[in-house]
Image: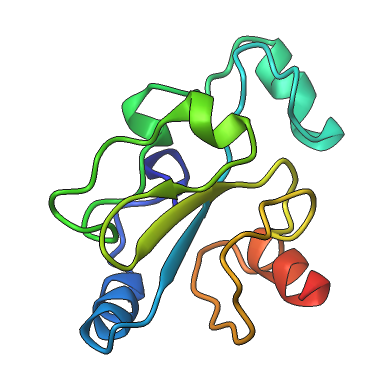
Length: 135
């Protein structure tokens, strides 16, 4: 849940990630980072990015996770690390992984040895649904 994709409405993801952390469960933040100009974007979004629109551009405030869903002391996202396909540690239980397409399992890292999933996110018809189908 990037800042660029949120409205001002409150969301329940904060409660979900807090509950997982409280029980020592991992929280994986699946992120998109669109290179300026849209070179790594889906075809459906590439035209917008080629026209100059900036969404989840690496290193911008809008590319960072929504307020309150990563640990307070979490570092900023590391675009170089994430775009290389490696996970980034954000806290004792939190990781970020880059996904090159809407679904969370298309060419993403497989290093975290996870066998059970709980999904939380926004815009159900797109990324969450694609991820659930891929899982």
